[in-house]
Amino acid sequence: MLSQWLSTTDSAIFRKNTLPLELSDQIIDFVAGLKVKKLRAHLATCSLVCRAWTSRSRYHFFQNCRLLVHLNNTLLFGQLLRSPLCTILLHLETLTLRNNGESSFHRIQDDLKLLTNLKSLRLCGWNWNAHGSPPPREFLSTFTNVVDLEIDCKELGDFDHMVQTFCAIPSTTRLAIRTVRKPKMFCGYRCTPPRPFVPRDPLLATPPQLLSLLLDTPAIIPIVHWLNGAGSHCITTLEISLPLLGAEDLPPLQQFIRGLNASLEHFTLDAYHKDSELSQGDFERTFEFSTFQRLRTCRFNKLFPALSMYSQTRPLDSAIPSIVRSIASPLQTLTFEIEGLPCRPWDTLDSFLSQQPGLKSVIFEFTVNNKRNGCDLLAARDIEKAFPRIGSMGILDIRLDRKHDKSSVRAGKIW
Image (cartoon, rainbow, N blue to C red; front, side, top):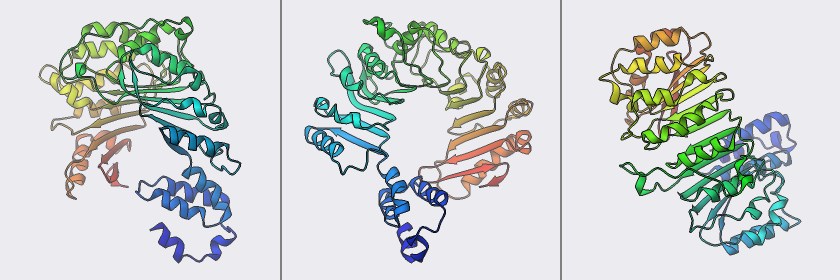
C-alpha cells in the first residue's frame, strides 16, 4: 500500500524534499514501526524517494543484524565490515549471534571493533553447561560499547560460564537471561534446587552496573545467589518470571528483593507455577512491597489465574489491595495482564484503587480468543461496569490484545 501511495503521489513533492526534515523522519519512523510482512520492502521504497530519505531509511533497514555463526557467513560479514564501500557501520545498533556448533568468532574479532555504534548484543543457541562451549571472554571484550545484553540459552547448567560472559562486558546496564528449552527436571514436579553459585574468580563477584534485569528461566536461584554475593547493586527495572519453587528457595529470593528497596522503580512479575508450593503468605513475604521506596510502575502477568487457587479462603479482589496497600511509595501505573476477569463483584478493589492519590493509570490487558466482532466490545464494557469509580476518574485503560489486531478501550471510548 505504501508503494502504491508513493507511485500515485506527485513526485515533485519529494524531488527536492520540500517536506521539513523532522516530518520526513517521522514518516519513516512510522513506517518502520508498522508490523507488516513487507517492512523491509517499504523501507527500501522510502530510501529511493530522495536523498534526504535515504539515511533515515538505511538506519531502520540496517539497525538490526542477525548472524548465523557459520564459517562462510562469518568471513563474508568480516569482509563487508572492512570494505571501504560499507554503509552499515553507522546504522547497526543491534547484533544477534546465533550459534550452530561452530566456533569461528575469532576470525572477525578485529573487524567487529569497527561497530562503534553497537549498543545491543544478543547471544542465542549456546549450551551453558560444563560440556558446552560458551563464547570466549576475549571475543566478548570486543563489544566495549554494548549496554544491552540478552542471552537466550538452551540450558543453564554451569552458571560460572555465564557470569564470565556478562562480566566481560562491563558496560552492560540491561541484562536479560532466557531459557529457550525448559529442562525436563523443571516440568511438572519438584526438582533438587541448584547449588549456590560461588565464583571461581574473585573478580566475577562484582557485577556490571546493572540498571535493568530480566529473568525468564527456571534456574533463577543461582543467579539470585550470585547477585546476593556480589553485594550492592542499583537495579531500577526488574522483570522476573517465577518458576516452580519450593520453601527452600525463598530465603535467597527474599534477600535479593529486599536489596532493591531503595532503587527499584519498575517491577514486572509473571505469576508463579500452578504446581508451586508457595502459599499466598509466602508470596507476600517474598515480595515485601512495603520496602520499596521508589516504585512507580507495577505490572502483574497472569496474576488472577495464579491467585484463584486461594479464592476459597481469601476473596480474590482483596488480594490485590493488600499488595498495593503495602507499597510505601505512591504508584503511578498499575497493570494486570489477564486471560479473563472472573465474574464476581469487584467493588472492594474498585473503591480501593479510586482512593490512591498518585495513581494515574490502571491497565487491564487480556487476550481475546473469540474473533467475532461484538464479543470484544462486550468484554470491555463488562470491565467498565465492574470498575465504575476508576472508570469515571478516567484512569481505567482496557486493552484487548489479539494476534493480528490490537485495540484499546479507555473510559468508555474505543480509540
